Amino acid sequence: MAKKRNATELGTQPIGKLLTQYAIPAIIAMTASSLYNMVDSIFIGQGVGPLAISGLAITFPFMNLGAAFGAMVGVGASTLISVKLGQRDYSTAQIVLGNVITLNVIIGIAFSIITLLFLDPILYFFGASADTIGYARDYMEIILLGNIITHMYLGLNAVLRAAGHPQKAMYATINTVIINTVLDPIFIYGFDWGIRGAAIATIIAQIISLIWQLKILTDKNELLHLRRGIYHLQGKIVKNIIAIGLSPFCMNVASCFIVIFINKGLKEYDGDLAIGAYGIVNRLVFICVMIVMGITQGMQPIAGYNYGAQQYHRVNHVLKLAIWGATAVTTITFLVGELIPEIVVSLFTNDDGLISRAAEGFRIVVLLFPIVGFQMVTSNFFQSIGMANKAIFLSLTRQLLFLLPCLFILPTFMGAAGIWWSMPISDLASSMVAAVLLYKQFQIFKNHKA
Image 1 (cartoon, rainbow, N blue to C red):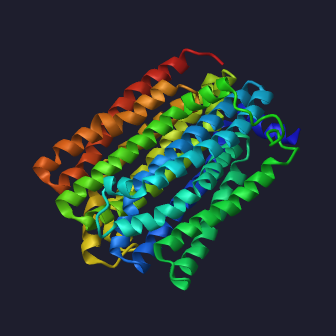
Image 2: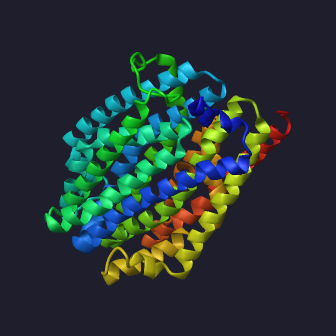
Image 3: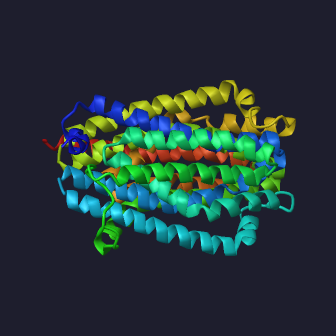
């Protein structure tokens, strides 16, 4: 009964207490995840060189593409589980768990095989040059061989949060970060494996955490646990998972193509080091994004459960709190980027040209960050309550409707600076769209009585 209370308390405990209980572990986990990526960049930049940073940046579209499939399954399934638990439909939630395992295995293997077969052409398409292709290839070969591990690890972490175990999901991520941080210098410097060492450390860390997740989910005392008869794919469940997960999938695919355009543009107007500068800025901004994602992940099971239970005033409350928290985080990032960009950028490299490019890019990218926190929350909120169409629309407005045209137009007048300025301009436009949809949704909830 104690295990079941972990889920059902989402509909009874005070919203502020619940959001703190669920968001803080998720924030810690997501911050740790972003630091885990940043640690790789720091060790590679300091230990291998500035061109290795550029080679690593070339792999970002690959990482986004892999994350797109992982998010489609993980986020879609965790949202569906939250809603089913709110409806007391425990048997369906159990089957969703089994389908997560099967889908991750199928997609993980297929993605690895296809991309490994065409690795070099893909990397050149992503913006690699003769000077950076070797670094990018060495890193991605290892990452792709372990891709199924990555998918399973991320998917099961999302399930743990939805099943009422945000702290265990946090521990899994923190363990991964600690193991990766310990192994990175050993493999990169001690064994002299270079950029391949960073990739091997990443996969080993995820394998260890995945084993721990599986141990938790094989406990028969858990409300949701692995057992026979739940792994056969069911059409309706798979369709629902994909429908809900389509928003983060589209967002990550769009991010993949956006990064390709950014890399190609920076290479054309400012060379390989500019790609490395964007890689550094991307890692720094990623910390902010992951903290906000931690807030939204804390919001997700609360919003999903109470929406399923038709307690709309509680859904409204958790949404407002999440917006305030996200805005505070993005404002802090703005201050760091405007006041001390050189200091944080120098963590990655001691190359003066790379530091100068990255610091200036960082200032521009975060210029309008104080207003984008609620846009990120709003997109994830609609996803949390199963409104896939609105979530997809918001996910794509910034990337495709606003940012992509700016990336084509502004560089023709401003050169490389136009690529950097495209980002805050698209932030402003997409935030205005989110404000309109958010206001309309507030009005809908005001008209419902729990």
